[in-house]
Length: 539
Image: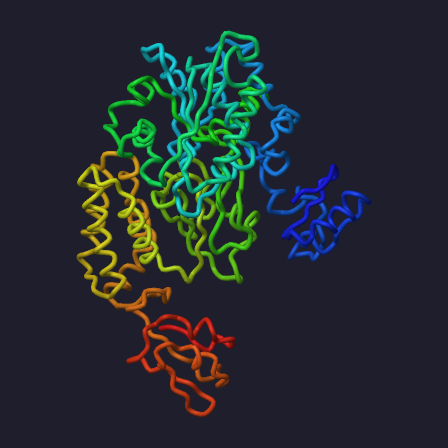
C-alpha cells in the first residue's frame, strides 16, 4: 500500500490499521513504523516502495501505474498522461505511421507466442475487407500466472487506449475483450473503464473530433484453457464451442465472423500507449536484439519474494530468482524453474545464467507463455511435476485432434506408472517418442507445446526418471509408492505429537523412542509435518 504524496510504503495492511494510517500519516505526516518493510539482510526499515529490493531491481513500464492510480477513476489515468498517446495517434499520425512506429519498436506479442506485433497489425490492415475487428486476450489460464489479471484490475484504461490506437491503425471499429469469468474484479473494473471512456469521448463516435469511431465490449470466457488459443477464442466469442481451427487459416485474414481480426494479449495492448508516447527508439533501447522491451512474470513457488516482476528482456534467471525473488525458501538448494505454465518447460540450475527472452527460453525447451515462473527447490520431484501438468492438460484438452487427445492420455498413463513404481526402462523411450509425436502433429499451439514439461524434464532430469524405474526410488521423497517414512532415533524426543495425529496408528512407542510400522503407514506425511525436531524423514 502506497500512501500520500511522499509515497510511504506500508506492507500487510489490515482493515484495523486504516484509522491509524489516516490519523497519523494522512493528517499529521507521521510514519507508522510497524507497517514498514524491514530489509531481512540489513534490518533497516524502508520508507519508500522504490527502495524495497523486490521493486528497486525491476523496470516497470507496463505496470508503472498499477497501485498508483484508482483503476475505477478515469481522471487519475488522464492525470498520468493517459490518452495522450491516442490523441497523438489520431490527430498527428497517419495509420501507416502508427504501424511503422510499432514495427520499429520491436514489440512482440506478450501472450507467449512472441509474434512481431507490428507485422501482425500490417497484415490485418492490408487484408481484404472493409469490416475488421480487434480482440484483447485476457484469458489467462496457466496455473501460477496472474499478470493479465493484475493489469486488468489495476490499470484497465491502458488496455482500452492501446486497443483503440490499434483499431485506428488497422481500420477496425469494433473491439472485444475476452476475459475469463473467474476474474470478477477484472471484469468489473474493465466495464467501469469502458463506460467512463465512452462518457469522456475516448470510445464511440468522432473520437478527438475525427471521423474515427470505435467501441469495445466484454466477452466472458468459461475458463477453458484451450480458449487462450486464438482460433478457439474467436470461436468462443462467436458462440461456438471453443475449439481450435486449422492453422493455415490466419486470424488476420479470416478471424471473427470470417473478417480480418487482430488479436493481441492485454499486456501487448497496454504497451502501445507507452511506445507512442515515448517513441519506438526509446522502447527498443531496452531488451535484447530480437526481444525488445520488458516482460512480466508471476514469480511464485519456493522463493522468498513472490509477486509480479517486470524486467527487461534478456535479464538472467539468476537475477530474477535471487536478487529480486530473494533466493530459495528456508535456504534450500534451487533445483529448477518452470516458465510458460503447463505448456512450458523446466530449466535446471546449470542454466541459471540463461537470459530470459522469447528465443532463449525456446532454445532451452521452454517458452514465455502467460508469464508464469514457478521456482522449485531440491524437494521437488520432477517426474511427479510432469505428471501433475499432464493431468491438467488432459483435463483441459478440447479433444478435437487425436495426437493431443490420445497422446497426452497415454503419456499420463506411462508417467503415472513410473511414479507408482510400475515403470520400465523402455517406457522412457516410448514416453519421449510420444511427446515428440504430440508436439509435431497436434492441431493447435497448445497441443504442440503440451509435451514441453515432459521433454524438458527428460532432457535435464533424466537421472530422476532412471531412479524411479531402475531403483524404484524417488530421490525427492515425493512419490508415495517409492518412499518409506522412518524416525531418526537420535532426534526423537518421544513427545508424542506424531503418535496422536497418525490416522493409521502406524507409530509405535517404546519409551522415549518412536518407530513407524511400514505395514500400516500410508505415507500421508502428517507425522513429518507434526514433528518439531525434524526426526521424521523418508528414504
